[in-house]
Length: 507
Image (tube, rainbow, N blue to C red):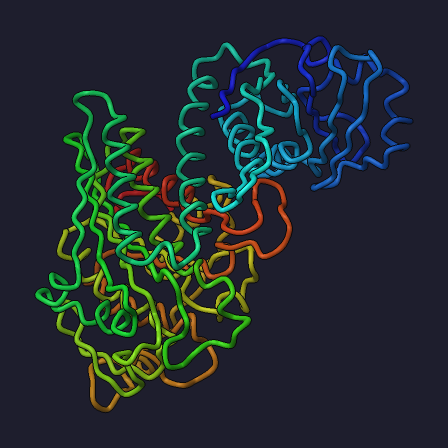
C-alpha cells in the first residue's frame, strides 16, 4: 500500500522522480507550487501556452524539466477556477494515472487544510485503482511506495491527522469496487455473504485490544423462511444460489447515536421473467453495490472508532429465471407481514429491501439510510454521475451535505403525495410493487420503501447512475465500479458522531 508523508519542503527542490502541480485557468500555477513558478520565471507563460495547458479540469501535461527544478519530470494538472476539495481530488486522481513507473512522487497541489490533504490522498490512491484479479499476466504495479504531499501546513496536528482517515476510506472504497467488479458467477449471494464475514473478521483482527468489534450474522434461506422474509425468498427463488441476509452490528459503549444502514445486494439481475435486453444485462453485476457500500462504510467506521452504533443489513439475492422464479401476479408476504402483489420481476430491489428495512426497524435506530441501484428512472432524471436522495427532508438534507463533503454528487427528489395512491393500487394485496405507469418510477419506488421504515427518520439513495463508470477513467473514478456511497455513508456517520441523533442534527 502506498504511504503518504507530509512535508514542508520546496517542490522546486524536491528530488522526487515526478512533481505534480496544479494549473488555474488564468495560466498560473495553483497554490502549493509558487517556487516552481519562480524557478521557471518568465518562461512559464510560454511553456503553458506551448503545451496547451489552460487549467481546465481533466487536463494533464508532462514536461521534462531539464534541470529547471530538482525533479526530472513536472506534471501539470488542470484544477479549474477556485479549486475546492472536489477539484483537488479529481486532479490528484488524474495525476496518479499520468505518472507511471515512478519510484517517488511529490504532490504540490493545494493542501493547506485537513480537507484538502484528505482530497489529495483520496484522489491519488483512487485514481490509481485497477482491478486485476482476473488478469493472467497483470501489469507490473507502477504505484510508488511513497508519495510526498508538500504543504506549508505539514507540522499542524489537525492536517497530519487527516491522512489516516483518508487511507481508511480509500481502502473501504477500493474493497467495495473489488466486490462490484467481481464476475457475478463468483460472487453469488452465499459467496458474497462469506466475503462480508471474512472482511469483518479481518477488520476485527486489526483493531487494537479494547476496541469495539463488528458482529456478523448471516441468515440463510432456512432462517429467512422461518422469519417470513418473502421478498428475499421470492426474488431468489429462480436462482440455484439461495439468498442471504447479512446483518452487521457495531455497538461502541460511547455511542451517541444509532444509525441503521440498509443495502440492496442483487449479485446479478437478469430481470427475472421480465428478462432484460441483452445489452442491459452486461453490467448487472453492479446491482449489489448498495450492499457493498453499506458493509464497507460500517467496517470503516469501526476502524475509525466512531462513537455511533450501527445496525447494517445487506439483502443478497440473485434475480434469475429458473423454474421456481417468481411470476407477475404472485403475492409475497414480507418480513413485517405486508403483502405485495408482484407485477414486474425486474423491480426486484424494492422487494429484498422491504425485508431488510423491516429488520432494521426492529433494531430501534434513530434514523435509517438505505442505498440501492434501484431505478433507471433516476438515471434518466439525474444522469450517470449523481444519486437521487428521497425521504424525510431533514435526513435527506443531511445525506446530501455528507455527499458534498465526501465529493459524491447527490440531488434531492420528491415523493409526491399522489404516489401513495399508486403504491396502493393492487386489488388483492396491501401494496403494488409496480403499477405499469411509465412516469415517476424512481419516486414510486421510494414511496414503496417508505412503507417499511416504521415511521422512523429515513433517507433513500438511488445510486443506479453513479455506481458504475462505463466510460474511461476520469479524476478519481476508475473504469467500472466507482465505490459510490461508501464515502457519503461514512461522512454521514461522522456527522452523527458529532451531533448525536438525527433529530438534533443541523441540515
